[in-house]
Image 1: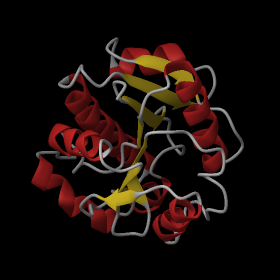
Image 2: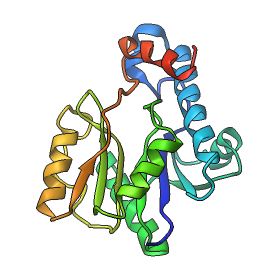
Image 3: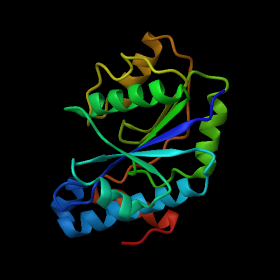
Image 4: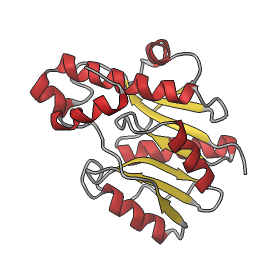
Length: 204
């Protein structure tokens, strides 16, 4: 088994660009602050596991150097490409698998419960299954890992809806990937979710 690689999807923390549902209630300044704390929390966990190299896929265009200054020199950086989330995920996974032919773990920064122990568990499970997925309570997922790239993996998904996790499971079944789920975690998408931050030592 090749060394797994992590693909971390981030947005540069511009006002009105990140955590917009939180921003509607608490203001864009608070939304940016929360997003930066979530990303910093996860990047700290990733730096603690250099055996799993990380590529940060950032957006928008033109913010590569700013994102590197923010998250640090421990990662490599690449621009997200595609018109919607599914296309961006597909393009990134295809490019990385073509370059490294290694298992991939796709992450966002919205779930503070993701830590090095969970990531090692996902890597271990990929030795027995073709895919591993971490569901969130809102119907999405916080992690998707797989051993081989499949061009149709990200098709037919209603991105941003509560159907993402279920539709992705159906897609994995359709392309005949053996699969297993990690524990369910909470995303930080709305003001009422923020009470979870204290569990992970994150204040705002």
